[in-house]
Amino acid sequence: MKIALLDDWQENAHEFADWARVREGHQLDIYHDTIEGDLLIQRLQDYDVLCLMRERTLFSAEVINALPNLKAIITSGMRNAAIDLDACKAREIIVSGTASPGHATAELAMTLIGTMARQIIPSANSMTQGGWQIGTGRDLRGATLGILGLGRLGGQVAALGKAFGMEVQAWSQNLTPERAAEQGVTYKDKEAFFATSDFISIHLKLSSRVTGLVGAEELAWMKPDACIVNTSRAPIIDETALIQALNTGKLGGAALDVYHHEPLPKDDALRTTPNLILTPHIGYVTQETMRVFYAETLESLEAYLTGVPIRLL
Figure 1 (cartoon, rainbow, N blue to C red):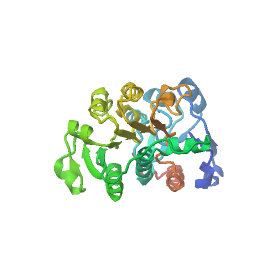
Figure 2: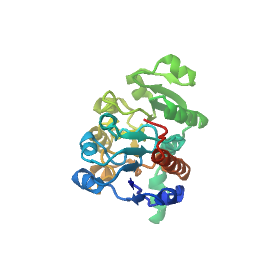
Figure 3: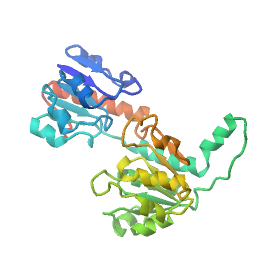
Figure 4: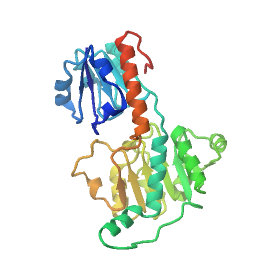
């Protein structure tokens, strides 16, 4: 069979799994760039199996239906919003996944909160430019951390915040005071949540309900020195409203690890927005997580090739 492994951005997939195990009887091609539309369809025409890094390349129904030889997709993680699963089901295309440790994203969110609180990036830049102190940071201890979405990752960030001595509160459309109390977190209604949080970290599953959930109104409720972190999904924040709030000084700062279009275009307005930290979707990109992702992608691939697919989505 012809197999394509996509979006190996750092060209290190070979470090985390023994791909020679499938190359003995099959053709395996590894791609390091990200393309879309007709170019993507043209590239993948002859492939039987695709191995994907979750949510780097969009596989809409249009793309899936334009790939006549496609029989199986292996994705890292057990959820990949970039794959149209209904289109796969209609075509009887097998979709398998892998485990997803998750804690790496929680650690990044907390790191970004600390980075903004202590003004690490401008301070470090000042040092490399020959300067010295340029501002006064703030403590995390005693500050209020708001968790938008108290699921697995949100719960992990809440625990990290409490370890720093932060007061932790949460809100989401489905969260109840009882569920928040189970994790030792205070429940707040929506407006109070935004108005009283010093730092907000987003941890929601993307759906039509949460698209644009953090808009101009919600950002206006926030304290002028408050900061917001998004390591979840880009559409949850109204990007135009966020840029406006930062450009006008109505928000203390923000940090983003996820974007509407990835890789982020070089001329994107986000790149020149003040008080904004941008990281290149590295939430899950650690050696430990990639070892799980690629090793289990190979395992799922081998299971499919032997006729006994595992971890079906």
